[in-house]
Image 1 (cartoon, rainbow, N blue to C red):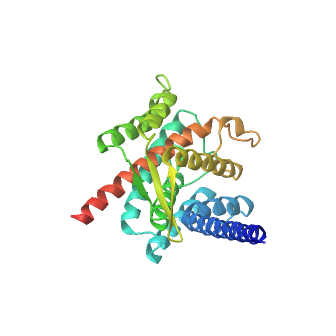
Image 2: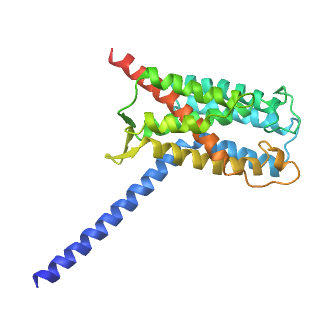
Length: 274
């Protein structure tokens, strides 16, 4: 009799655990979705402007206008703070500089017309990088992210700079991305992020979070190129899947993005304490 009661109790406990895990997963997904508002608007705009031609302005200019209005609304509504806007603006500049160089080198192109293009690069493109920063800032705040065993500022900043510079220098010198990736694993091997869902804290190795974000951005890149956000040389005649090797590029870009956001958050946190 006791064995039967014990088994029933175990079944009930297991069901409760599965139910709680499901609720936590749904809540985590909801918080992630809210953090992705800016990227979702960009993708929706890419799809709509591709399927429904808009009058008066070229498509790239409509995308710039939509991004500007979205950015204004997010700050106005309180979805983003002014400090987060500063971070996002920094990413817009960093992304635009990379775009100008990569388009010049023929890595990809923006074949459509636009009034607001600089050396073949439409200004809306910077918002695609800014949207990554927007996601990181939003998720950081919504999930109450904490860093565990974060390396020294004097290691993080040069590493982020080296990763970013390699996007430029590999066109003239050897590509050291794999060496940099190995260095990232060494530096952040013991580091982790703690995030909170429904007042319950979870821990994830930082290297794993880099890989997951990088992979999902690669998926997003395929969606973006499908809707004509930009074109790789092998996509000029017909769309094709972005090479899986691009995951490494996005992984490194995510690392740079995370390192910048984390460093600025830590600096801001120290300022508030003082």
